[in-house]
Length: 430
Ligand code: PMP
Image 1 (cartoon, helix red, strand yellow):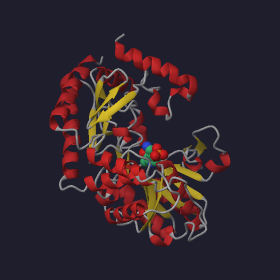
Image 2 (image 1 turned 90 degrees about the vertical axis):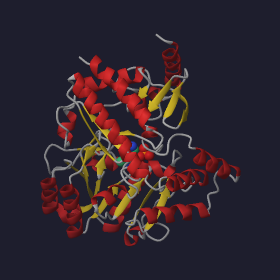
Image 3 (image 1 turned 90 degrees about the horizontal axis):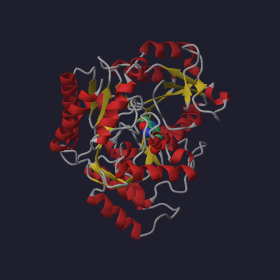
Image 4 (image 1 turned 60 degrees about the horizontal axis):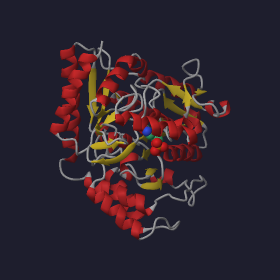
């Protein structure tokens, strides 16, 4: 065992004495891939270093936020400057106006926006708002999409297609789950059936328009167009959860790629640039139901925190550099094409896909287009590949069912180095 593993091992052992499972968010524990999580001590550009100073090319980018690369000097400067003026006031600041103006400019479907501190909070609040604005309780979500851990959203499909769901977590009352209908992603007919049967009871449909929590799964245009039409016809609210896809697949998010206008949008990750900022916003008529204007309550001590907003605003400016997204998409494509070619050489059943700056790796002969196909990907092979890459200094998401991310600091040389490492990793797979 080398020194780097032993230091991570001892930190993990220590962490478990005071923190459940040794981590503050479950996927970090490496449960799915096995082995010891790496404890990170610093990060810069496309890299981070673990407790024993081993360097990794990082393909999770804090699960999305690090789009301009870690510790970008302009972001760090903005944070330092904001911090010298005080950390939190519990009263409004001009920075929050600037941030709201920027979001409304970049995502035109957002006319009014409320800042919060996590994607979970944003999605949960958007749901409450949809219910409050429509006076309806039922919601529709899709198997494999993640919208944070609000009670109504930790629900999987029930026993029949149009039966309401079952909790995916202990502690979620059946009484909450019974209002959540869980359908299959990219299965348009199920949406038609659901609205035909209970359209007048559905408050909202919430969807990741490009799914990133069951690996990367593209939606078909027909799927999104159908939900847009059905929501409009039945007075339900369409919520795009763009916590991951927002400012990631394109500057205007997945809604700009697909040309579809949701009623509400949930944002997070990139808009905080690595500090806790998330948001939900949309059509003014709906947003006006929020307190203090309306009857739907929502609040937060640290909402619009000035230091976090400084990091977010600086990041939102940096991503508007000319050619930023073209270059990011090219980087992700170079990676997926390189990996696919290396896998082919090694005779491994594998495909890869990317949308903008996010990508998916599939240990399957054909690219999965729905949840059921995704679940058939070879998890054991992914785990072996993950560890071979990790040993060689490439940090992929520690789960076969998470998307990966590149940053603007992943240049061609870094991608080519990754592909070279992968070529040998694929050959090690049996
Ligand atoms: N929605 C989506 C689409 C997400 O990917 C995530 C987090 N991965 C969330 C919501 C929850 O965000 P947070 O972890 O900031 O609570």
